[in-house]
Image 1 (spheres, helix red, strand yellow):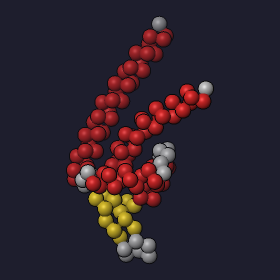
Image 2 (cartoon, one colour; image 1 turned 90 degrees about the vertical axis):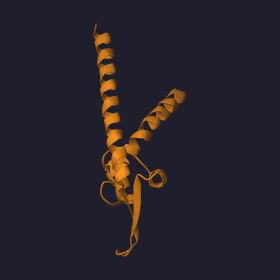
Image 3 (cartoon, helix red, strand yellow; image 1 turned 180 degrees about the vertical axis):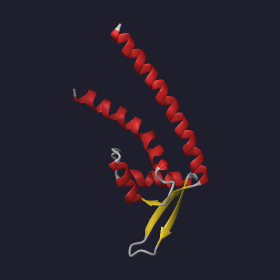
Image 4 (tube, helix red, strand yellow; image 1 turned 45 degrees about the vertical axis):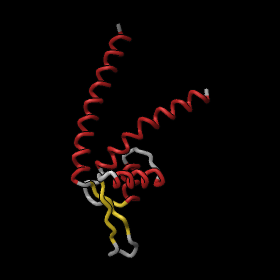
Length: 118
């Protein structure tokens, strides 16, 4: 049973991986710093650790989808991230793909339910 549980956890992790990218992009329309984003995602039900989020944000920045800005006006300097115009275009495309895939999955679920009930 332990092996099956591990396989299931891996499948769930794969599914979440792509979802997290979209959620990060959706939550960086305005400047936000990493810890705040971790809290926002966790409050929304997405479990993510800082050591997962920060490399992802750096990768998105390197790809041109996020930009970072240092705020040194507060007592503790913080690095804020904000979606770039290119990041906004990518986010819009990902949302369309998310919606398309959700419709396909819902249709498949409905067919499965119909098949089981007949």
